[in-house]
Image 1 (tube, helix red, strand yellow):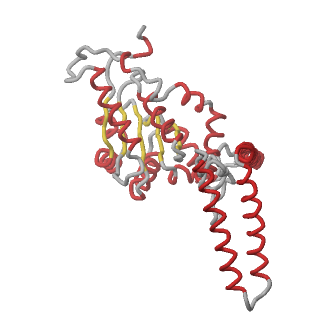
Image 2 (cartoon, rainbow, N blue to C red):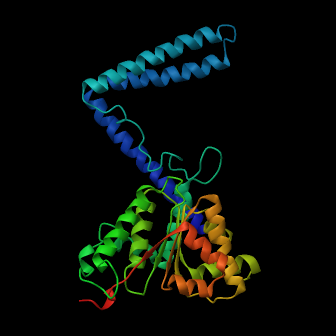
Image 3 (cartoon, rainbow, N blue to C red):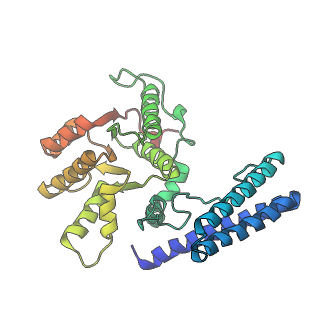
Length: 327
């Protein structure tokens, strides 16, 4: 990822922290105006905190005794403050700094120095903006999903009408999101012709998980192979970097769209298997969307790829008239 992009994201984090502190100051002033004693207590707490630091550096002989007295004083001040807040119907957390991400306190980094999930997702969101995918997520999500566009009459030899079938797919997809954090080994295979809602449903799931601060990578099979080729063959004109390659394996959810549109050969088949298999082993979840039928998948890919997909993925068939041409 370009350094300028990293700097932009870190600058955004700084603005978030400034905003959170500013909003806390406004709430603080409001409370101080309403209950002046709370300001007096906060001032005393601040001074008491200084006394703790002083006790650590000086008076080594009476250090433990002094520290105990100071902590007891601090405890009483906080109890009095909590009482005043409750008495005036003010939530105890009202004066806290409200960070967007409590894990990293809007710094982008955890205490152990690792990038926070929100930071990783910010990088991915930036990539989404560059490819206009983010705009699709705003338009295509569970809130905008309309079950009524699917006809509720028999279709060919299928047991369920397209609408009944889509209600089933919708239910499974929402369950996939709601239970995403569970280690249930659940993965989804969306298959069917174009214009039946596969990409829309992928976007619905991606948007919901992005909102939950999960790391979601959404790429076509063709683009995934471009990323792999850049990584494996160290191409000079790099369109993607090392992080893009790692995210294929490490993202909480990988959505492989348009499986089957990439050039199929021994190399590509092996790489698709490696990604899917590695994610299955590590418990990372994957969604595959394809226009191919299970039979066509088995004809194109090796048996072991196909068997792993059928074994570990819930196959969901999309069918009905092409919605792109429906009035």
